[in-house]
Image 1 (cartoon, rainbow, N blue to C red):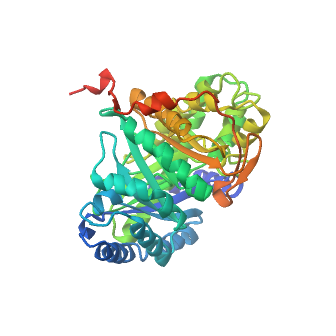
Image 2 (cartoon, rainbow, N blue to C red):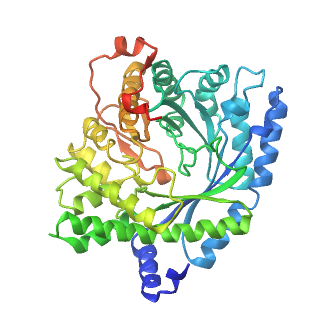
Length: 451
């Protein structure tokens, strides 16, 4: 990595870390669990526990050593596993909660922050195992602490499985009635990717190696700081500045990924360059958009500004590494971004504008608190809208909604830590129940026929 020999770049990186919230957001180990399958769920659980503990036993220690030696903060150490609906397909059990509990125990045993992969891929239809897993989600997420779940309900090639969309509205509703925090660990995807290191949507895809290291890098504060030097300059200069900044951030991530890969003896997968904000002041995607000249995130021009940001981040990252993957772009999770929270509270950012923004950024409607009495079919309709955006635009989109039990519009729900807090946002009151109840599949768009 000859670029590290440049003293000015070393000093710039140190300044980014010390003053601008630059960090490696996560080192995530992906582990294949297909060989853990067994028709006895107890044996399957033991196989899963044993394999995770063997493969990830040195993950946290290795990441901490790299953090100390290189002076680069590594905020989270995580594991993603093969979608459990595939691993458990031969199990005779009807309830997959014991598998989630096993994931939780194994994750705690190796000392990681989160484990992802209590997941199912049902964008074209359900297997029996998919349905068992989905129906287990409310109990599984409330009986575990650090297990994350994701369900893929749509893709550009398959269309939208509206039966899955309708079911997930009910599952989110049921989970929220038990514990709203469970919903913070549940994502509904369109075009889910196999190498995403970020939670709650991470799982280890079937096309991945036996074991792999993926790294997620963040740095909204670094980009915002760089853009402050571009005041009044045309958008060409803004885009160029973002690209150069993203290049430096990605190079740092690649260094950490390659080093972790070498020390653990596990293949390096991808660097995911996603501008993932935190509740900390100065670490906000909304602030970047406002530095571009918007009085408040959410006002007219926000979608254009976000499109520029997302594209420039990707271009800078691709120049820095041959293995940029995952989601890579700009995240807009409301509860995790101080600027987004402020914009919602001021009334400049609403659910419709957030939906428009998801057309041009990474992922979708993320960590949004909605009224506690929101009906299941309304949640399903929101999922359908977001899935359609992903399907038609051939991009990953997702929904992570939290019906805030006992809360109404204007109230606030606090999640703690990196999940932050969120004001409860208003939704349309008109019912989409008849639409959602139709079921079946919304067909794939014409441009899915590329062969």
